[in-house]
Length: 67
View 1: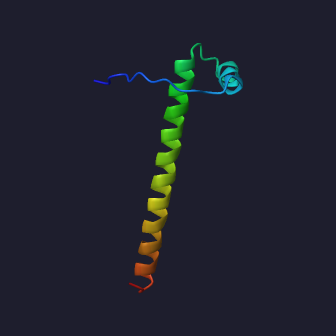
View 2: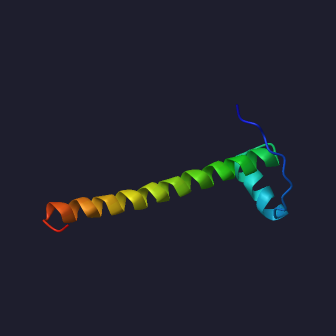
């Protein structure tokens, strides 16, 4: 069960208004949560891409006879 955490943050009014207008979110909370979800997703993708690239490099060098 997910327990919400209450926090206070200072965010640019201009940035928040743009986010709300462009996304159609009704609340600042929705915009912040969506932004955090997107940030986590992008960071995971970068992490797995780097991990996959280094694994692929090892596999290629192993197949070529280099260890």
